[in-house]
Image (cartoon, rainbow, N blue to C red):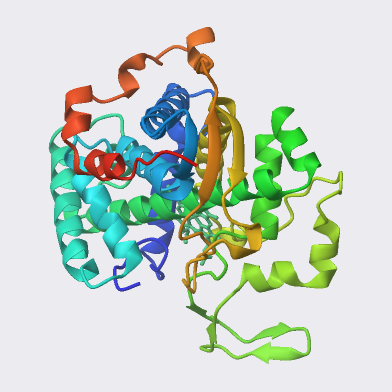
Length: 365
Ligand code: HEM
C-alpha cells in the first residue's frame, strides 16, 4: 500500500490514468483481437509446460497444485503481458512472490523489483513492443518512468496473486463441490463455474481502504465525510439475503455481485483475469484424468491475508491422461497465433522460477 499506483491514486491524475489502463488492456481483453488470441494460446502452452513438469514426478502421484500450477501460471502470464525480454522477467517474478508473502526479505525484493520494472519501462520507451507497458505509454505519454514502473508493479501484483487464487479456488470448488459443478465444467461451463466461485469466495475479500468523499446515508447510519471505509465483499456476500440466492443448485446465473468491485473504480481487468483463469482451469481438467484433494476440504490451509482469500497450498492426488489432448489453436489456427508464445527452452531451464519449480517435483501417493 506504500507504492502509489492506480488502485490508490485519487485526485485529478486518476481519470487519465484509468482511461489509459482501459485502452492498454483492450487488445488483451477483446476476444477478436490477435493479442487476446495470442494470450489464450500462451496460457494453454504455459499450463502444458507446468503440467509436464508435474508429470516428471510420475503420471500418478501427489502434487501441490498451488505451488506447481496456480501460482506460477499467472506469473508467466504477467511476464508475457509485460513483454520482458528473454528470461530476465523470472527473477522479477520471484521477487513479486517475496513481496506478496511479506516475509523478512520482502523489502529488499520490493526495491529490486521496482528497479527492474524501471529498467523495463525505459526499454519500452526506447523500443515499444506489443505489450502492456508500450500500450500504456502510448495511451498516456506523460507518464514518468518511475510512475510507469509503479503501474507495472500493480499489474504484476494483481495478475500473479489474484488470478492464482481464482484458479485454486475454482479447482477446489470443482473437485469438492457437488456433482453438478463437475458436470457443468465438462459441459464447457468453466466461466459460469468461476462466476459462482467468485460469488461464494470473493478472491479479494476486502477492497483497499478508502475515505468517504461526502456524508453518505447507509441504512440507519450516516458515514461522515472523511471517515475511513473498508468495503468487504466477503462480508456482503455472506449476508443471508444475498447468499440464499447463490445456493449451489440454482440454475439462475447472475453477475450482480461485488467480487470485481462496482462503479467507476471497478476492476478494469475482469475479462482478462477471467479468460486467463478459465484457460488454465480448462487445460488442467483436460490433462488430468483424476484429481482429488489430499486433505479434507475444511482442512485446507488458508492464508491469513486481510485482503485475499487464498490457499497456502493445494495438495492433490492425481492421474494424468496418457496422451495430452491437442492444444485448441492446433485444431483451429487463428491469425497471429503461433507456437512462438513459448520462450526458448534453454532459457527456461536456466531461469530461477524453473529451478524452483523443478525442486518441487515429487512422486508417489
Ligand atoms: C481474480 C482476479 C481479480 C479480482 C477478483 C479483482 C478484483 C478487483 C476489485 C474488487 C477491484 C476494486 C477495488 C476497489 O474499489 O478498491 C479491482 C480494481 C482493480 N483491478 Fe482487479 N481484480 C483481479 C485481477 C486483476 C488483474 C489481473 C489486473 C491487471 C491486469 C487488475 C487490475 C485492477 C486495477 C488497475 C484496479 C483499480 C481500478 C481503479 O481504481 O480504477 N485486476 N480489482
